[in-house]
Length: 211
Image (cartoon, rainbow, N blue to C red; front, side, top):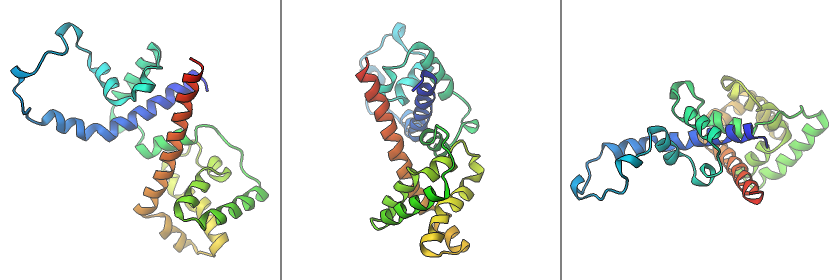
């Protein structure tokens, strides 16, 4: 994986971490200390105080990732984390970018049917197994790469939904009802998060191996 790709992956992962912890950090800062300030030890002198951007890195980037970054990558991460949240991708968008970071060819009709058959076997083990098999398969790899997030729902309906039509004869209304609900998106988000975590683990393992 190129340095640029590593930097992009780390930045997206760090921003996800920041979004998850923002409320907790704000609540912590808003609270009143149980112990008065004059009883607190001076662990960090004024001369050693980190700037805000460094504190942002320390707070929101996993230590094992942070320690592998060079100065250029750290600066890029600071810019990413300190950006306007309204202009940054959502957590779901970042997971899609992270999981489907490389283009994949459109599957042939034969490959599509073979994948549907694999999905049918996975479905016997439950929804999580089905969604995991779909998310890791050739149809999702092609359809979910570099998408306009406004089309996310329709893409899922036309891909995973097409499987349900093939396997169970569902009509469009039934397919839409399965996909357009919070429980489905939460389940699919969990699957993407697992894949994302595996990718990060491989990245970290590879870097440690070749240190």
